[in-house]
Length: 358
Image (cartoon, rainbow, N blue to C red):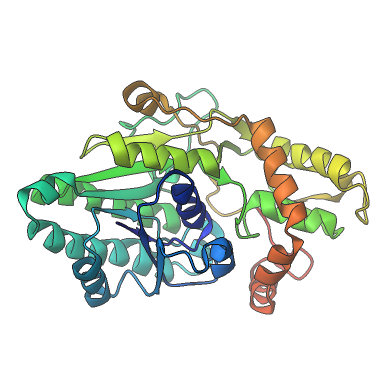
């Protein structure tokens, strides 16, 4: 049995589904079901006895303690987080509460649970904390990619809150001996991603004939990781990672945002030629840049390959084709998550015409 937090969100739900493709070990899935959590992501698991969903908050220490006592998981995989930079700029309080206070509450419950285990169970137990490359800050055009030894330089309330949570996990390992691991990943993309993020936003807007808003000059660079590859990496770290260690997980796909937009538009030209506006690239609209927008992220993922033998299976070309095809085949899912509340939020922060920005 493992406990997964945030398992109804984008990466978490993909991890749960991926887990059951490789294992029958049960999962207890704790999720608060905020705007980005969606039980429809897990619809294929309805009636599956391996999956136990619990609607709750990681900040609720007594609830977490109860779940640990009842189910006695051998591991905790911690995805639960507020993760959208723009939202952190407009409303940082939720990020402090979930990413810092929530991780602290989870660590406290995990430490108490682990301390009471017998020697064999103690040795087997793991706390795997899933984090982001944004904690490392921004790179110049010629700087080396982020390594696990790169100093932290977070530049947004989101990345600062994740940096704080990383430090707490490290401290609980070094102070109390909690067998913890941390992974720092690059930009994920794939099925079930909430359409406030770049790639699903592009797809949703483009097929509706709406503007494709691009911050600044579109040359901010990110490394792109297909979510299925990320899930495989997390399984690998959980199984074979050394406690107390950090593992960077990247896709080896360092690309400017504008190239991502062009790639998505080209695929939509091919796969969805009946859109209101084609070629889809005609919809590209440059907008005012985000405050403090990091210019470049790049991940050096050699450590996880060298030590654990993991390397991404998808190229960007294969991963983005799968992703575009999934969204085109799941228009009902997109329409369901783009609720009135979502549209109101987008209009309030980005203007009525934008319908969101990357």
